[in-house]
Length: 433
Image (cartoon, rainbow, N blue to C red; front, side, top):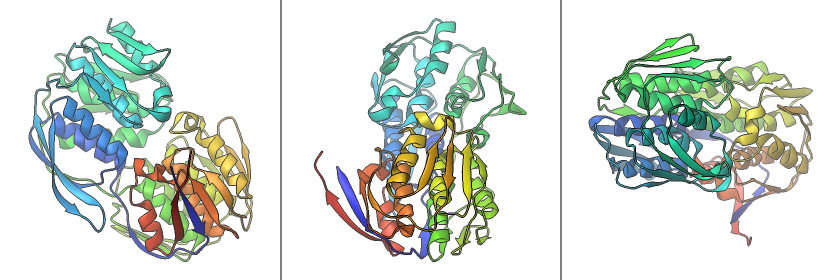
């Protein structure tokens, strides 16, 4: 296990934002389902992306790293799709990636053979009840370990009507949207309550369209899917990730200004909401076609509805902790079943630093302070918790030690390098368990 000791300093400069993890997963899968070779440019080999590449390899999809920019840790890969999946390995290791698990489970329904999904960390406990309901309705056999991984699935997925609640993870909807167009018959996904995380569904529909798959979106209440569609290969460049940019945007507000480059301001990413949220809090922010520049700003607490942007909550909690007045984060109950219970984690760890955070059933209430103290905190083995606590150090009067700091490898392997490039002062060390 690694830890970092951060000497509080004011970050400043320019950072190239890594590619969107959400879009990388989707592009790799769509390319793998295609007939032909797709070049996917601007990929970072984070632990989650490696899990998806390895998972697709188990389904007969080959990939090849063709170019690497060592300065930024960015690669291009060729995905060799055959248009017909073939099962090479009956056990899929999803590591700690919820996207990999929930996107690939429906793919098992193409084969009719027994396929087992394994994982580690909190992924073992991530709920899959939405799929279990479908398996029972379609007489697909499945076994699990008292509701936890490993999960074994055996049986073919049939086209039909799939009823799903809107407050479940959008990953279930995406998993079905990948596979239903390939089945021999038409299907429909009916959303029975207001859909949360619409932005993630938009990303899926956009990727599908680029790979020649067409889905009719009836105002997010129904998704109508024609069967017997075929994915076409294409070249695709992954845009910068707004959920990762959010950490540097807040760092610029708290520090001395940061320019975040390689962003698509017309992006469909739901986490682009970070721009509107920090503006409402009073941040001085300049938005251009492909970059965002933030200046040191004094922000005020507001009420933040996290239903459409749950991944922003850890860093927004950090910003709220040092903003004037009270910040209230609502509609965030789903954060309790992420890589950690992120509501409990952020309340616990920010309070260790001297913040005033009250954990609510579905959110956080944060009374802002001008400064935090510092101290020893834990990432809860959660990449977003580790990064949010690192940014909190900017406003601390004493050093911050983050235990299990290498959790960032899940999504952003270069985070600590970028932190140092902006003037961050850190000492990395190994600690015993």
